[in-house]
Length: 160
Image (cartoon, rainbow, N blue to C red; front, side):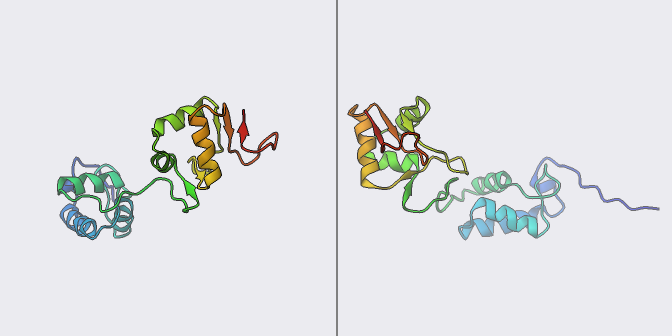
């Protein structure tokens, strides 16, 4: 005789064997301000799982239960963590008081040339010369702005 343990998917956390315990633990962590992805990792390490995932707790499960309990996220987390010497497109747009979509359109139409980070993010140097150059691009003083690391012509940032 061989014993085999099979974890079945279920429809809700309440149907899990330790579902009530998991819910109470995640709500405690959420009230303490722990982000959803970290709560998911903690609960997975403690042996819990999501209803439709047999080997781990998914952050979406945590978010769903947290919102159902009316617990708000203390601080929004960004997908793109970076240091203060760089600006993400939303940060840059706020700083220059321009629409963030305008930046993405300029990148897509190759008027604003910038390398993506390995994470996939666009990050702009937080320097006065870059901020001024983007302002010049916005005001049609220059036609193209090259902020790539390896610039083919090495003539600086601006192309008129």
